[in-house]
Amino acid sequence: MNLTITDVTLTPILVADPPLLNTQGVHQPYTPRLIVEVVTADGITGVGETYGDAKYLELARPFAERLKGRQVSDLNGLFTVADQVAVDASRVENAVDVGGLRGVQTADKLRLSVVSGFEVACLDALGKALGLPVHTLLGGKVRDAVEYSAYLFYKWAHHPEGVPAEKDDWGAAVDPAGVVEQARRFTERYGFTSFKLKGGVFPPDQEIAAVRALAEAFPGHPLRLDPNGAWSVETSVEVARELGDVLEYLEDPALGTPAMAEVAARTGVPLATNMCVTTFAEIQEAFTKGAVQVVLSDHHYWGGLRNTQQLAAVCRTFGVGVSMHSNTHLGISLAAMTHVAATVPDLHHACDSHYPWQSEDVLTERLTFEGGKVAVSDAPGLGVELDRERLAVLHRRWLDDDGTLRDRDDAAAMRIADPAWVTPAMPRW
Ligand SMILES: O=C([O-])C(=O)C[C@H](O)[C@@H](O)C(=O)[O-]
Ligand SMILES: [Mg+2]
Image (cartoon, rainbow, N blue to C red; front, side):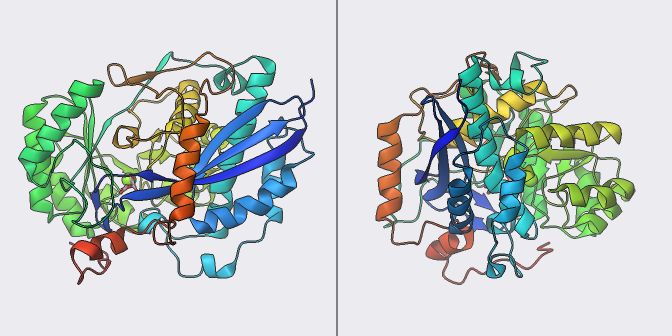
């Protein structure tokens, strides 16, 4: 068996995205992703997926060059390679990530997000070469299916008039009744039993009313609300007081570890984060201050599936819960999330996934949710197959774009509907 990497292909694509609202603005009609393929000397191809914005692409290209001649099994070496790739200072100075939804941008965060795509591709190739599923390479699954939550968004019925976009059949959700209707569709289509509402869009009293309506429609089901740090400490404490009896956790109510610690000290509602703890360096302060009770891991942020396991071990050590965060992603990443989640012993919360919002994919067969769960594949590697025709179509869309959609910009998308829109100063309420 020859595990030497002989070729690496990077395919940036644009995938359809519905008009989902968050505190920064609204999703653009198409969003960039990067598909990574590594090929071994034996002709085995492994696939990975990560962010596709220009700042990731410009790191992924020199990274890919350095991989040729290395072994797909040399996963630790990926971090050494990442350190050799220079990050342009302008990419990290005063910059925020994912439209401001992932905290402050750093060179490390950029590098780790790139490593994650390659690590998954290497694990897929290695698994295929050995005839073993990725979860076995990670030490073995402790469950046969991974539970996901319904990721509810306030949304418009369609993108603004005149903007080229794919249609979606979810309808609008801009009030409590719309949110409950969307939740019903999620349960009918996918069987989800827990619900997360993306907040920070409307004033808190309206979002409290939406969560109350969900609690009434789905009594006893786990509920979460995530305003992406849009509230002051006082507002966060007030919302926690109002919704404490129905929330499984409140996600990033306030921005930054000190504010989260203050909120945590003043409420009994557990706080979750994918904003103030997104790297190992941020753990110590947050955990010693008791700022978060649940960390939402994300293998793209943390540098891959093995780092996600390490994060879970640190959380376990400190008695902090762990679950999973999601941005827009396709089936390769859902498969990767499912493999790693299957190996984490104490995963007590359903994971987030945007996948139901994605009508397009690059796989020959979409992954499915049964009873809100994705079955853990025992096929070699990730257990997914690339649909090269679809990949080519979505890449063509990326090639044809004049640059406006190649970098995610929720504020720019919002300005099309509301020219006066400026990214809100935080805290917004
Ligand atoms: O949990 C979160 O904070 C997110 O999922 C961030 C995402 O970027 C989401 O808010 C979105 O895509 O609008
Ligand atoms: Mg969040």
